[in-house]
Length: 161
Image (cartoon, rainbow, N blue to C red; front, side):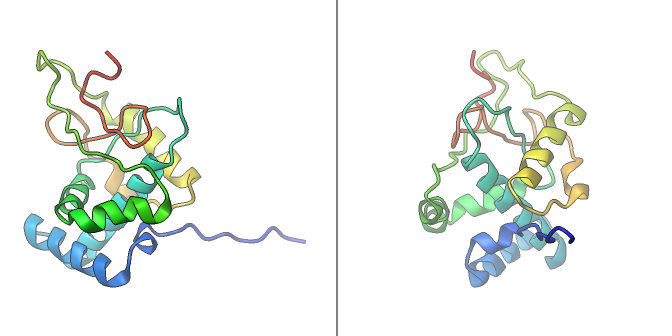
């Protein structure tokens, strides 16, 4: 007897298909992308947000890829839908607090080779499909966002300091 095959979820399945299309078009338009690439980026941002919102206490920090980050930013422009995304699923809202280098401007994220693999692993462990080519872009205080080990809260670059 063989084990059942379980297909990974798409982040896009977490929102209404019409809204997914609307959000993806905004990502494409505002970031000069073709619609297919914008849909992939939007899908990954939704999977990331779902994973970050459900992250267990004490789990490692999850970092956002610079390639996927634009979809998170565009999603927040739709404040009603953004709030509903978390409320509908019963998750704490992931607030956006971009890393600005901290009070002294010197704090940065770890290199992508250290930061992104645990994030990708967490998204996959949560049951979502990962587009690996979108999780290779750098992460630092200049170009991306993440969370700070507290479900629903991205970092302020203090990382607990």
